[in-house]
Image 1 (cartoon, rainbow, N blue to C red):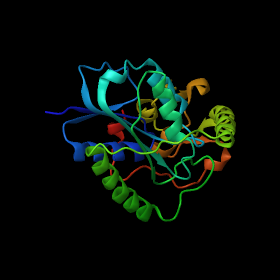
Image 2: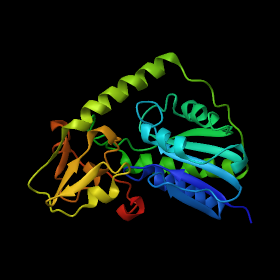
Image 3: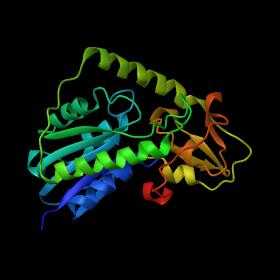
Image 4: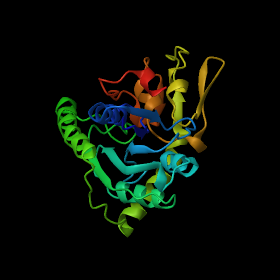
Length: 253
């Protein structure tokens, strides 16, 4: 029987939901979080990458994971990606294509999946969450069927303007990662430490301590904190938190 594999990076669950839905359509598919090293065994029929667009490109944590991943052209018959995004995905798909090309891998399929924006540090939660999630589910179902049929898409090329936007975004993320604060409402539950996809949080004396250099700015720690104790700059204080309603926190551990 065909064996498929999906690598997934997610902070608040949008990408995990998409990966799970695609896996359900394909059948016999493992979803692997891009947190721990993973050794591929044998040849797969399909290998996919599902992750959110950050500043119009691929999260640095995803690029780092792919660099250390033991993958090449012989690892699968078909390679695909679905990029979740709250706004424009810009160069996310061609950036991934370029990263995979360095491993000798050809990306045959790549599409963006509009969903709920979750970068709470920059903007509040959109008022039409339910509708956005409904539309995302519908579109993801179509993508999943195309992937099952091994459809091909035109990946396109990266654009200079978008590349500059992405680089500026990385500088912003780096500066913002230094602004995490923890209020006295913290219950020492350590959920943030378990959720962090880059292991940038450790508990010391019952309080989370952040490592800005490795922070991906996924917002998982802020969005999932049951006491709303974690903030990243004053802009996030009082803003409504978001995590995908169909995903449990332990699915991101």
